Image: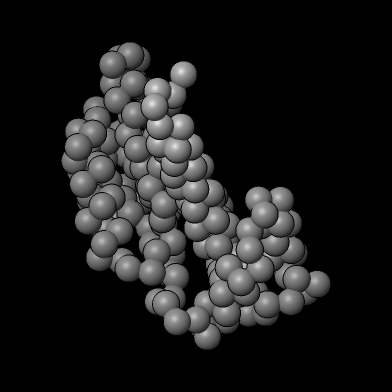
Amino acid sequence: MSGHSKWSTIKHKKESTDQKRGKLFSQISRTITIAVRQSGTGDPDLNPSLRLALEKARAANMPGENINRAIRRGLGRGDSGALEEVTYEGYGPGGVGVMVIAHTDNRQRTTAEIRNILERQGGSLGGPGSAAFLFERNGVNFAIKVPLPVSDQPTREQVSKLVDSLTEHDDVETVVTNLA
C-alpha cells in the first residue's frame, strides 16, 4: 500500500520515468545533430545515418519539435552551441590506457567532468598523445595496438567500474581501454 498519499507514489514514478526519457531524448538529439553535421544535409533521403537516427527517435516517441531543433542545430542554425568531437586520453587503475570520445557543446565543462570521473576511480587525465600510441584508429573505431595483460581481479573490476562511470556521462560516445 502506498500509505495515505497515492499521489506521492505516482509523482515519484513519473519523475523517474521522465528523467530516463529526457536522457534518451538527449542522446538521440545529439546523434541527429552529429549525423546532420557530418553529411551537411538535413534530408534523410540523402543521409542514411540521419535516417537511422530518425527511426530511433520515432521508436522512442520523441516530439517532432525536438527532432527539428536537433536538425537545425546540426545545420548551424540552432540557438545553442555547436557540438564538437573531443578525444580524451588518460590512464586508469593499474596503468591501463583509456581513450574517451565525447561530443560536447562545452569543452571545458566536459573536460572537468571527465577528469573528475577518472580521478575518483583511481586514474588520471593525460595530455594529447599520452595514451594515443597504445591505440590505432581505424576510421571511427579504435583498435588496441599495445595490449596490457592484467590478471589481477580487483584491478579488472576497478577498470570495469571506470568504464561504466564514463559511459554513463551524457556527452561520452565511446570508451576504449587497452586491457587484455
